[in-house]
Length: 164
Image (cartoon, rainbow, N blue to C red; front, side, top):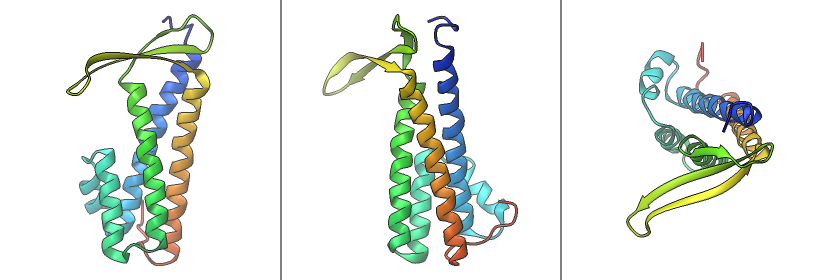
C-alpha cells in the first residue's frame, strides 16, 4: 500500500498508538494516587510494567485500600474497557496491512499458528472509521479514568500527589 493511498489510515493508526500510550500513562497516574504522596516511588513501580500489569495493580491497590465498593466497580468497568481497547490496538500494531483497492479501506492480514487450529491466515477489510473509532475510544477511556481518580481524590480515597 502506498503512503498516499493510506495516508488517512496511517494517520489514524498513529493516533491509536499515541492515545493508547496516553491511556497507559493515565493508568500510572491512577496508581500514583493510590500508593503514596511521593511520586518518585510510584514512578519506579509503574515505569516497567505492561499495560495489563498496571490494570491489575490499580485494581488490587484499590481493593486493598477500600474493598469492592461502588468506586471499585466503576474502576473495574473503566479498566475492562481499557483492556478491550488495548486488544484492538494490538491487532492494529501486530497485523500486516495492504491496500484493499478502495479509498479509505485496507486489508488486514493476520497469520496465526495455534495448537488447536494450526496455521491459518485471517483476512479482513477495515475502513478508516474503524481506526478512528479505536483512537477515540482510547481518548474517552483516558478521560473517564482521570475523572474517576479525581473523584477518588476529592472523596479522600486517593492521595493528592504534587506533580502528578
